[in-house]
Length: 124
Image (cartoon, rainbow, N blue to C red; front, side):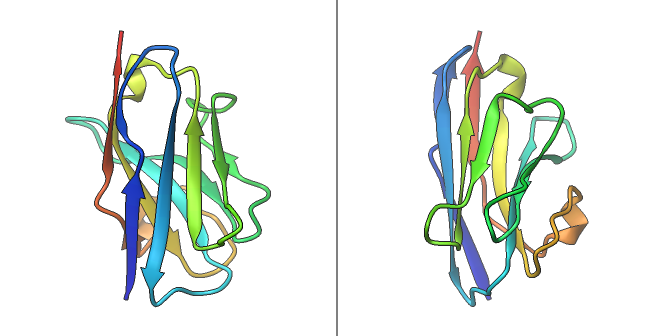
């Protein structure tokens, strides 16, 4: 079984920055793709960003492109999300997700492993 644990959420003013981290443990696997999703109150969980195992060629939702950066630090079973120029509409619970294989997807159904989430609140 794979366990994913997110950290780094919190409260920040609009225009500020936060960095989220996610670490995978347990039955880890090579060539895993990892992603971030978010869910705001009353809304469906939506794709934010994803990275293949190599760390290059990330994919981003249009709403965060140019502001968020996804990265895979040296330990490949981790994934970070640097969030800059935060807006109140970025407020949500952010979830880390993982799947075996190098292909990245933007749909929740493609990711069998999920963390419990970390709250990000952006005040105006």
